[in-house]
Length: 237
Ligand code: C5P
Image (cartoon, rainbow, N blue to C red; front, side, top):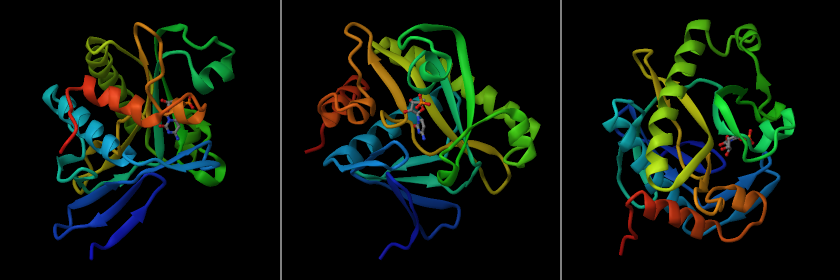
């Protein structure tokens, strides 16, 4: 029996024999609006595990390290154990979602330059948007760490935007999480998948991400399967 360390909305984390490595299992659960909307979607765990693995490998090729070690089954991967920094780092290229709502900018408008935002990871508070002063006040990160997170997030955006662009996809926005390893080094962690990105087909503007589930726009697995195929992935038999 694997020893469960943590269970989140979309993933379970298990202990391994190596204290510096944990096993991540991607679940078929879909949640939105801070857990208020829920569903079980067969195949979602496999697709997110595969897509995240391909994206972390792509980033590695471009010199961006993450916690990712390797994918070991359809729904599982091994990752370096890190202590998660309690911030969600969101990068936006095109207005959508809460940015459109907050600033009254129409969805789909290209932003003049990428916007980086920080949200506090706290379900009880509903993951509020926080400023640098807020982050320093509650000691969620130091000023130096905030700069590192912003720099890394923008660097990842540059790589992923051009990568998705080549696949005919507009990377509208996405959320990153970072952690610290045993040596205190800041590493990209968590996942990068259609659950955590907005991905729009460049030709049709079709949404190929979790908004399909949030807004009841059709089949989530079909949308995620499209992303997986464009990334060069294929169904295992
Ligand atoms: O909802 P909002 O517009 O702020 O989301 C921005 C981006 O961050 C979207 O791609 C969304 O999927 C992602 N996100 C996430 N997890 C959250 C909040 C946002 O992956 N808790």
